[in-house]
Amino acid sequence: MSWEKEGKEGSLLKWYDIMEAEKYEYTVGPAGERFFQGLKENKIVGSKCKKCGKVYLPPRIYCEDCFTKIEEYVELKLDDAYLDSFTTIYQNDDGQKLTEPVHIGLLRFKGVNGGLFCYLEGTPKKGGRIRVSNFNYPLRISIE
Amino acid sequence: MKVNIHLNKRVAVIGAGMTQFRRRILETPQEIAWEASSKALEEAGLELKDIECVVIGSAPDAFDGVNLKGEYLSHGSGGIRKPSSRVFVGGATGVMAAITGWYHVASGMCNTVLVVAEEKMSPARPHPQSVFRYIWDPILEKPLNPNLIWIFAMEMHRYMATYGIKKEEIALVSVKNKRNAANNPYAQLGGNITVDDVLNSEVLVWPVQLLDISPVSDGGAAMVMASEDVARRYSDTPIWVDGVGWTLDNTEWPARDLAYPRYLEFAARMAYKMAGIENPYKELDVIEPYDPFDYKELHHIEGLRIAKRGEAPKLLKEGVFDIDGDIPSSPSGGLLGVGNPIAAAGLMKVISIYWQLKGTAGKMQVKKPVHTGLAQAWGDLMQASTVIIMRN
Ligand SMILES: [Zn+2]
Image (tube, rainbow over all chains, first blue to last red; front, side, top):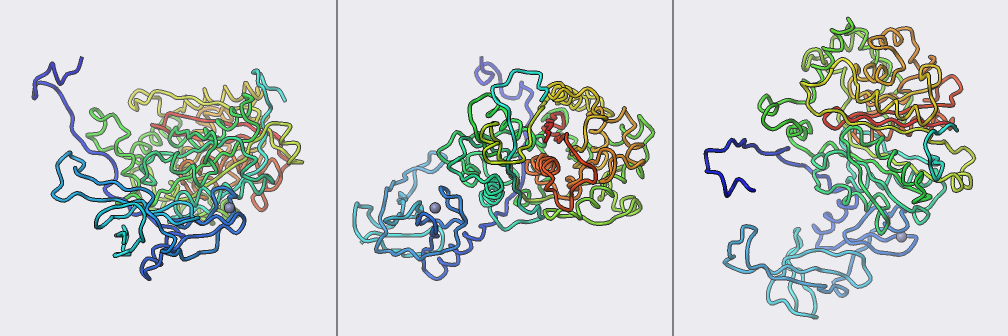
């Protein structure tokens, strides 16, 4: 039995409050700093495991498989970039219709572990060359 | 070994690692977990592929500011594509993570477990204290806006009043632990302070003063646990887990005896029974009781039945708990000296005992030979306690 159906607003004893910290300040970590510094120079930076050769995007300071420290950072080439998947959003979190639908793409690079969610401009399609129109995070990309 | 319950496997600790405990660490929580984990594997002589399961201990999600923190931390804890789980009993989590690692092996389910504890207290604004704002009863306690300092001030005051204990007697814990921490390479706040320094430090919430409390810290700790056959293959000095115990008491503050930590007595009895310990004062060589506040170490020494009720301060004054005493207590420097990244601090206590029993505690090594040690943590709504007993 739920009180929503049985009770009358105002006749029930309720207690209202909010939860926890007001805000958070997150550190991006050493690999994160390399990544965001790269974006400032219009570069997408990953990191490469010396032991198994795996490249991580976003870069990490350790290899999740070898568990060894990663110290090598590499610039990823847009020639190797592809769209792994995309979606189009028509409603906001409250279920209201958006005036303009928003496209989100999952940007990946051949031979690289991981990827980045980006705003996708123009008409999404399969295949085609990736262009980055804005390197400020979150990235804006389009397909030529 | 005098274990009183049926176990499939005897369990040993064969490696441990820690990050520095610091006020604000640049690394992300995953990176902190990785640093501690990789050091523990290195000490054990194992690689990640040799680890069968991962146990992650972390206190409230709201510290690091990431929900589902166990899942989030699994990446840096070597838990990807492995049976991984997270345990959480508030401040008691660090030792509970070790206990959980223990039963993964003792049950016969796994031969090797990586136990990882991490806490990053620095992201929450304006202060991580706010994370505790909603652990209280929302209707009966929350309107008074309790915080951990005033609620413990209440407990400290009751403890002092019941047994006639003076603040200067309690301050000796802070003096001892910060002095011990000066020998700990991972410590945040080691150093030589005096009882007067504690008594003259800023009054936060009477009777709690600034130097009565452990600092807010970021940090990680990790440990490798293994079954006997694996342990003997990789280590000449495996340290055996001979007893574990944990108990939860009533979360209702006004209904508890504030002078005596009954929750701990029950947890300790469970662990002593398993380890075959009848007289803890005589049989324990070195201890790491949980000390987020100085009075708590004394409170816990009594709950562990190492001292009679109200008599821990007397033994402390006699030097029993000093690094060269009969039962050195918090030789690592404890939370008061090393720092208090909640779950990581609890596991740090277990690691301290492990290194003491192995004889590799370096400058922290206690003066007398040690064979049986105990680590303990405490938390949840301050009514959970976890105890682990190890032997070499
Ligand atoms: Zn690798």
